[in-house]
Length: 239
Image (spheres, rainbow, N blue to C red):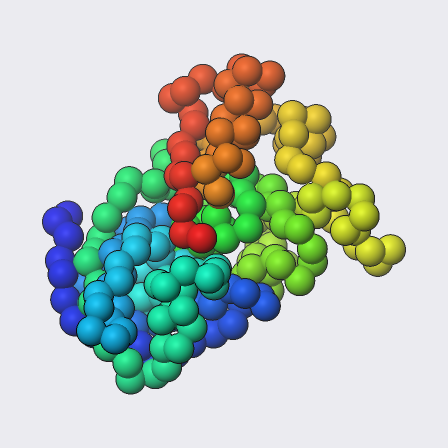
C-alpha cells in the first residue's frame, strides 16, 4: 500500500487531557490504512509549512475521518496545532509504517506510556470493532490520573469484552491518590510477571518516548528473555 499526499481539512478537535489534543480530518472512502500505522501531517502558519509524523489514533472502522493525537508542547508545530479549528486545512501523507497487530498470534501484551498510546488505541479499537478473538492486555503508565489519554475508550472496551484488559499505572507512589485502583510505579519485570503470568506466550508491543522504549526493551530482552521475534516497537517522538 503506497502513501498518498492530499489536501483535507479538520472536522473536529477533541481534548483528551490537559495537554493532549486529537484532531480529526476528513478523508474519502477509498483512503485506506491499517491500525497502528502513522501519517505525515503538514500545517501552515505565517507563510511557513511545518510537518511531523504522527500515529493514527483512529481505527479503520471509524469512517469518514482519520484522527491524529499530539501532546501539545512549546514547539512551533504544537503552537500551530493548538490553534487549529474545524474547517482549517492540513496536508496528510498516508499510510506509513509497519507497527501492526500480529493477528495470527492469540495473545498480546502492549506496554506504553503517555502519548505512546495513540497507535495502540488504533489497534485496540480495530480489534474490538472487528470482534477479533484475541487476548489483548495493556500496561499503560502515566504521571497522574489526569494524564491518561483515551482512558474512557480503554475502560469501555474492557467493560464490554473480557478479551481486553488494561492495567493503569502511575509513575510514583506519591502520584497515587487514596482512591486509585491501579498500579503504582514504572512498568518493570515484576509488574509484567504479576499481571501476565503467561507473558512467555504473548507478542509484545512497546510504544512510548524513546527513552522508555529503550528501557522496556532491556527488560524484555534481558530480564524476561523474550525473543526478538516476539517484540514489536515504536519509538514515539511526537512530543
